[in-house]
Amino acid sequence: MLRRFIGLILLLTISVVLVGCGEKEKTIKVYTRDTTSGTRDGFFSTIGFSEAVTDNTVLADGYVEVDSNGGMITAVKNDEFAIGYISLTSLETANVKGLSFNGVKPTEANVLNGTYALTRNFNYIVGNDFTNQTEAEIVEAFLAFLTTSDAKSTIISEGGITEINNEDPSWNDIKADYPISNKDNSEITIKFGGSTSVEKIAKALSAEFSAKCGNFIFEHNHTGSGDAYKRTQGSEKSGTNALHIAFASRDFKDSEEATLGTSGKICIDAIVAIVNKINDLDNITEVTMKKIYDGTITKWGEIE
Image (cartoon, one colour):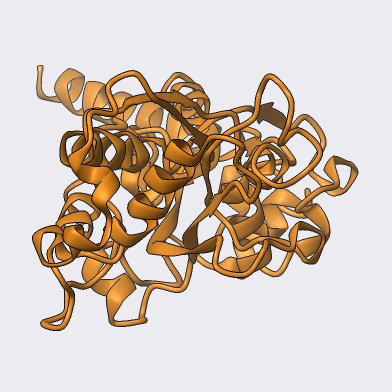
C-alpha cells in the first residue's frame, strides 16, 4: 500500500512537471492595437521599437491586431498564451494580469514619482473654425473647466493621473468669465471623440460640465487617437464625422499641428503589459518586451 501511494505521488509530480514544461514550450500569442492607436504609439515608443508604431510588417509572425482597449482586454482574457497592452485606466476592471515593467509595479503613485516608465500623456484638441457662436463659447468654457480642481477631481476618479494644486481654481471661481454657462443650452449638441483610452474620462467630464453649462447635449464617438486631429482641425473637420472636442492618448505629431491655444494635456496615463490571469509571469523588461514583439522570443519558456 505504501509503495503504491509513493508511486502515485511520483506519477502526479512527474505529470505536473511535464505540464509545466509543456506550457513553457507554448508559443506566445502577440496582440497589438491598430496603427492609429495612441496606446500603441506610446507602448512601442517606450520599449525602443518605434518602427512598429505604424508598421505591422516588423511584428512577430502570427500577431493579432485589435481596434480598442476593450478588444485587447477581451482577447487576452480569453487566450491563456496571450500578451498585450492596455491603458492603466482600464486595468482595475479588466480581469487580466498587469505586469510590472522593469521591476516597477504599474500604480498611480509610481507614475507620479517617475519610477514607472511606461507612460504617455492624454491630450485634447478642439475645433478651430466654428460657424455656430454658441458652440464655440461652450467649447471655450470647457477648456477653462479643464484647468479647475473640479475637472481634475473627475479625471482622477476615472483613473487619470494628475495632481490638484492649491492654486487651481474651482469652476465657481471662474464661471463668471463664461456667461454661456448661465444660458439654456439644452438644444445645443457638442460632439466628443478620439481616443478609446480616454473615452471613460471624456464621458465623465462632458456629463459633469453639461450640468454646469446650460445642460448642452453631449455625444461621444470614440474611434481612436488618429481621428482626434483629423476630425477637429484636419481633413474631416467639415465632414459628417466632425468633432467639437477630441482626445488623443499620445502626443500630436508634427503633421497634426494645432492652432495656438486649441490643444493641451489633461493628465498622464500608464500603459500596462497584460497577460492572462493564469499566466505566472509577473514582471517584464523593455528589452524582453521588444524581443517578444519583434519575434526574437517566441516561447514562454524563453523569457528570463
